[in-house]
Image (cartoon, rainbow, N blue to C red; front, side):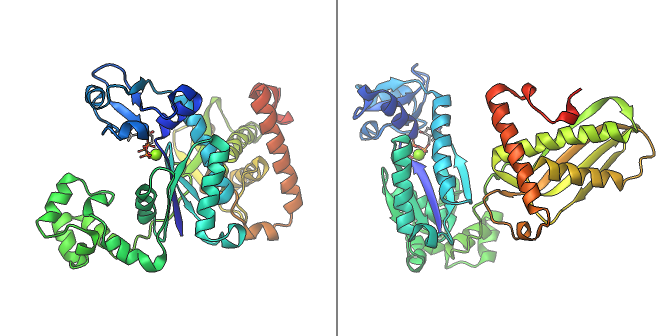
Length: 384
Ligand code: TTP
Ligand code: MG
């Protein structure tokens, strides 16, 4: 099952949290001037019809006693981060989709946390205890239904669509509720008598693609609940790399390896910060004549350890016969996966304990660098 979390009136709720005088009052977050627009409004202000993206002058007319406050994005980001940390403590598969929304794959978590309903309640409770704000949760067998469900009982809602109810539930949805169906598409579909997602089922994929192009196929899939999209954590980070152009071209393996160590450390640090491990390690060299050489290897275990990345990069370097000086050195990683995911390969790695020790060193270095700055700590071989 997929769970979707959406914070309630997020920016406005944070303002009410930080300033008790605003609690229970109609709060409108947005540009104060008449030319500004409403970013969001508290539920007290929504009662008067104030909505996101509405021009401020209109909001003032609808809700003259509304309290207008400018936004504080950094503060919202900070709260968002804490909410996402709560979600990450429940499942390794969390996909944040905006500052206040995320999908959580709760498949297989029942033994750990209980039924989907119990997981939903636990998330709501922990989010509230952590940031003192309410959220709404939707749980369904597919992503798009989970998102729609989270909106149904806002604020402070919990809506569960069981697998056996899902087809019927989807059939009853107004077509305008489907992500990707704007006013134009809705009008187009209306011409064919399609008003609900259920109405879509009367049409073949071919008929729908003829009318709507690629989106027709997608709509057909959604109507039949064949939404195969997965919860993909850290979608934006497909690869993490580090590289630089040398001060002087060189064929000296010692100099090149020192660069590799520096880049391996940088990449490993970024991976750990993002909570990811990499499956594949890439070596990148640009030669004096600007020819690009790339080599890669996928070791048995995914890693976020600088040593493992460095060792693999050196191995790739040793397999390449340098015929001319190098002007750029880089290390990259791909095949990124959440660090929490158990790895079979870990069990078979002969140097398991050793690499765990190195990870411990890496983490200690991170902690010291976070506290005192990176210039104070690094590996001895990189110090002059
Ligand atoms: P939403 O989740 O769309 O709205 P919301 O959290 O305020 O209210 P709801 O209870 O309906 O979920 O957006 C989250 C935050 O993102 C919102 O508080 C303000 C901000 N935002 C923008 O900056 N621009 C926009 O266009 C929208 C819609 C929201
Ligand atoms: Mg929200």
